[in-house]
Image (cartoon, rainbow, N blue to C red; front, side, top):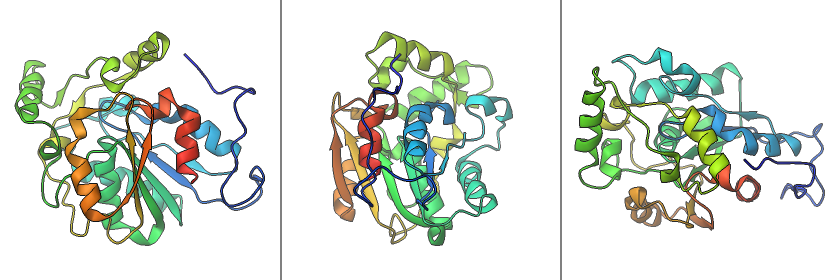
Length: 258
């Protein structure tokens, strides 16, 4: 499992010509993970962002990761949006760069609906995007809702569907895949079956950037691309797999700091 080391390239903040001084004010980052993941997946990216002087928060959504024991039938989109809203409010954050990866893009857009005045911009990292009023399943391939619902029912309680193999997320390094497999937890079914209540315009008038991971492409979220282009959001590409924060943390951070 590759880790950032002292030999990693020096990241330079685009706000200046030299590495960031930690004593200078930098926009805080709030990083929202995707399905079956947790705040743990951002460890490499968070380390690099902090090294150039940014505050970084990596909340784990209710029912996942180290908070998997909190899963109940009531956990759904509103719970997860509130998870992130609570971080912004209790930490009294302003000018936040809010990043949503994969499923977490829906959470990020939900937060933008609620607290646009606390955000500077939104970045969707290979994210799921749906039309206002649609559930997350609308952004996935046909048949996904049925298969994941059946998988959740097969677990005995119907609350969550089991995680896939880490290789699904574009992880080819065996150590990385094993590290992720050990940490993946079931995804609350309601988070995909119930709408997030997103309103038009998506992003609530904030600047939105979409980073598409292309190597290999994650076909499960391809429907998001048409919405991104229609909305006129900034489009970028990153030549790595879907879990870019794990497979290419330096390149991911460079994109976030652009």
